[in-house]
Length: 223
Image 1 (cartoon, helix red, strand yellow):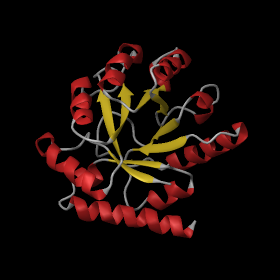
Image 2 (cartoon, rainbow, N blue to C red):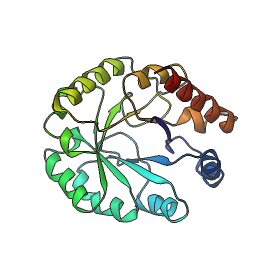
Image 3 (cartoon, helix red, strand yellow):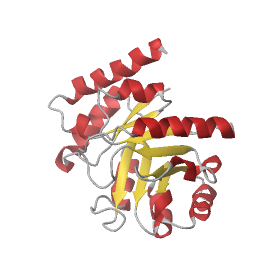
Image 4 (cartoon, helix red, strand yellow):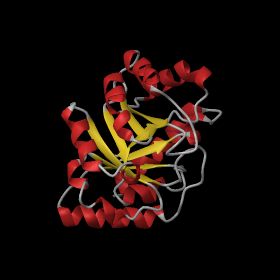
């Protein structure tokens, strides 16, 4: 079943407590937290204390997306801070199998992410080891970007790969998701829709969440 996973990257930090209450009231289960180090991507974001604070004051499942290099230096910090699922970029380390194995050894769910320019077939040797595959539908680093249309083809490629390997990881898409592309994403097997600015920058977040949720429910009935 597909679900909205709000991203906090574009949120006004001064409104965070109110925002989390709205998500809780709406029934949101997962939050997406982007971790950026200024090296792997040209931006800085949150640290482990931010994750720890949210984990200690809410019941959300935390989908922590590491856009850092080398990720090996950050794994312990964010698992201990409360990550429920830790996603690492294929492009960020030459030792991706070792990294995924280490995350699993700490009892944390694992994800593998790829950027728009990375061929999907490169996931073949690691995809069986992870719980989730994150397809970036924008170039990572900043919120509010436009959706890259080639993402649809990449999702089709991913579906074929999963079918060939007889696996069914969670499929997540991050970047530029809105009411205009959700239905097609769901048709291509996406489970987790990471949505940031389309929600957090809305003047009426409750109405926006309801609108997006209605699209998901309508698509589910049609499938």
